[in-house]
Length: 172
Image 1 (cartoon, one colour):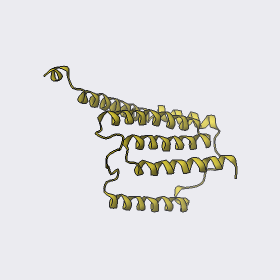
Image 2 (cartoon, rainbow, N blue to C red):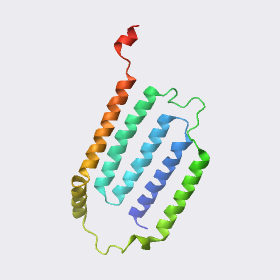
Image 3 (spheres, rainbow, N blue to C red):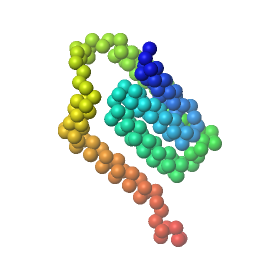
Image 4 (cartoon, rainbow, N blue to C red):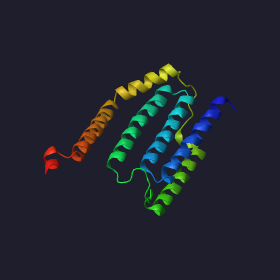
């Protein structure tokens, strides 16, 4: 086994471990941090696989998203520290069934790769891959990314405006 395979297995196990911790803790802030670590481990897996752009993008995006989520949870939740009795899972039976079915589908996809078409015989270099990805993102997918970003920004501003109490109401 090469060092690359060992690191890939390590970061994969870390991602799964922190994913489990998300649902095992009773604190929303700890859950957000565990999710951040899980997604950072996935970003590290991209880096190990020499997909530097995707790895750095994953880590930067998740760091920002989870930080904002933890801050909002600490501000607006009744018990963000998880000191009270709190259950982090809902609809356990449905969740277990959905997870089991998802696992079976994933195993079928892994064990039956012939349905994906022929295996690529020639892999382009890293520079060509980055160029192709850039053309895809800046081409037909740009409108979708810009629309999603604008929608997320608008919802964050609206949520903040709804949460802030106007000065006139405080004086009463």
